Length: 526
Image 1 (cartoon, one colour):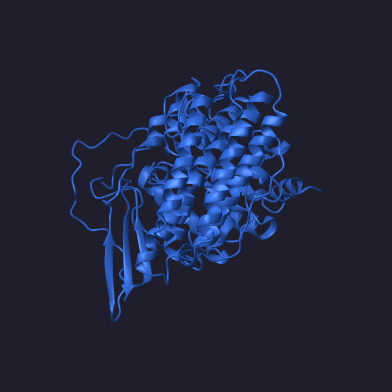
Image 2: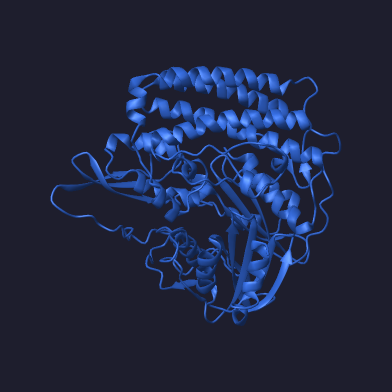
């Protein structure tokens, strides 16, 4: 019996009294409606028997047609490539769910987000502070409810955010941000320090909450791509591909073979230019400006290649529902260009890592242990640098990754050096993947017709973006328009772990540790 078949057997036997409906979709997805309040028991069962954790919580307002609100739970099994999607319905006069925050930490942030955006209370949630909502946002305003109307007056309530204080002899606080010296997005970092040693770091984000998920509502599937591309400016392909895979799954559409291989090329090109730039930026934060200038020179070369591929330096317009927006230019030898880029980058890496000043700053700084990384459910290169061997390209193959060979680089130290080397190896792996895809690129059309979107059925797309796993969850209305789109950028999961990586480091190492994580403010502050 396969693991997926065993799951079905367990849910129809041991858990049957709490499952209202159960059916299979898209081969490896088991969808069910569960009794209200059954989610914690289901999560415990999945962890104990299937080593499976929660990846996403989605609230949805169905008050117009069902007179209820919904909460959807997506559980992902990386070992056997299957998904369990569970839905519970809440009456409008009792919008509560049992909290799972003490069972699995990432759930806490989903629950706090749902409270701010929908007014659904997680009973037993140990952290009752707002997550998305700031002082100018009335507590009674829940903007993702369908009947929500913006208040006539947004004003500061004057209340300070209830940070948990850290006391003791010699302890003092250093506040940094949300306005920073550089041209970056806003985030507030509050350090509790003894001497120069950090004993606690608190992070507050959402200063640039944009209402992105609300902006998806009412758009056609094609119109949604433009918004998905702009969720995080450095992740155009990652987000647009996850979004398009979600609507394609909902419509039952499969991209043509040529498009699937070209999607690999585009996603790896995005991975390339970001990791190259980050290597230089990390070295720059050690004082080694040479690497920074050289890596940004290489990044510029990659951005110019991006423009030749899609007409846009950030690859906008590269992904469309049902396929890709552009074929390879006939006059571009991309494999040769990337071979030259990689040789150039390898030389910069060798010079940089041979510098004792750089190595001394990287080794041992910002250590995130494997246990802490697992507890926080971290993703991408942050996870792989802390000995968590996860990668959606291998664990849940999409596009043409199932037909290509590659190894996800995994490191055990969990420090800045490990996260730096993870980037270096991912640059090398990305070039090899692109070269494989170009060699095996089949002829044929670039797109397939999307078709109609069935109403009220959930679907999702999962992609290994350059920062880690990106999830887009979609549902359409009876007119085929987007009714609800939920986005999980890896930064939503990874940001809190930075606080633990900085413990027992000195304050001057914060920029270096922060850059080694390099999470997106915009991808978090939806």
